[in-house]
Length: 529
Image 1 (cartoon, one colour):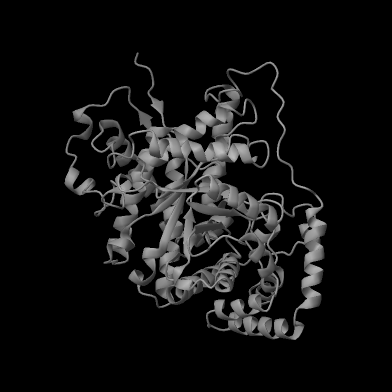
Image 2 (cartoon, rainbow, N blue to C red):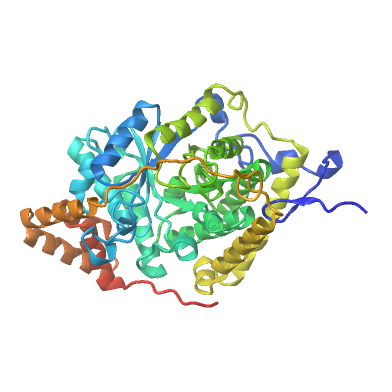
């Protein structure tokens, strides 16, 4: 009796051998096309990495703005081509560092940003006209974008020269992470306002990074990751179109964010399938005519969820494989996790090693010598087709429920991801799924490791900075600006213009978010399980 075939992370069978019969009837011209041409299966640009490598980003941010600024300068000196900012939990939730709810979390998982003064320190001495900056911020993403613009103006950099990305993807927060503030409807309105504002004011900025990464970290398999991410993308496009925008006016600035796991072949297939699905959706459903509107451009981060605290040096190997999968899959930018991130914030040395991993791939291997080296592979083309079919089936279920927001309100995506996470954990616990150093090949005793630690005094320091800010600023100017912001939020005007005025007057992140909370309320999820 033949053994059962192995299965991918998405539960699809992997055959021991693939051959020509696997691709019987496969039409390369329509399924693949040329690199840089519809349906973009082979990549979004004709030359991909043969002209220049992907953008090498390193996600960093911890403690105070001054500490993070020093780390960014180290990364730039080591060859980083783009910055990627991590914010602490209070900032992500729209609270100031001195708020009672912020206690114990200030500076812990990222940098604390309370006002334009902190933002000026964060990017002090870094020419914003010459770097590309990605900011992992969602519910208050518009605020951090405006703070960045204000810093650029202070440096004398025209806003049309600023390049970068805000994540700004609130729908996945309701599904996987929980750092939401407002209910879905006003959150989508705020995102549409960002699209309109950036088209007029910051035209080179990527207005959203529609993220599957965090769903994958919560347990989503690759098919769920791209299905639920693309379904969210469709919701954002519909929102912008409903607000009166032409799809080709904003779609070229949409970008995506995916994970890259150690299952290299399936990950390559996932990226190729995602490009093909998105191109077809944008062309056929939304009538996008600009090829840039049909392109799925994406950033990749190696899989933090697959890092282990046991034998952490083994993570160097995992990250190398994950990074290779992202490159072979055609990513536009890449962050490689540091080997010690399962224990604590990365040290300077471990962050440098993570960057060196990318540099070895880019400059010592031959993977940048040719575009889409897996094209025509029996196994990869078969897996790409299977991944596409699995993702489309899940997307159809979301549509049947009324779209991404309606499915979120019914708990569909969250429930599916939780079931997958539970199954994977069971497989690890039983030994069916090997995790090196955890359930096989363990050490009797782990070697000691000294992690980077965040000074708990940071919270008090930030509170002192806020007290000085509030005593030194023009309080009446802040009050007037916040009043104008509330008025815009109550109506239909774009809220980013009065929001910028408030931030320029040195209103804090918490004060601006509180003004919007007063109008829009906060989201309280319904437990449906």
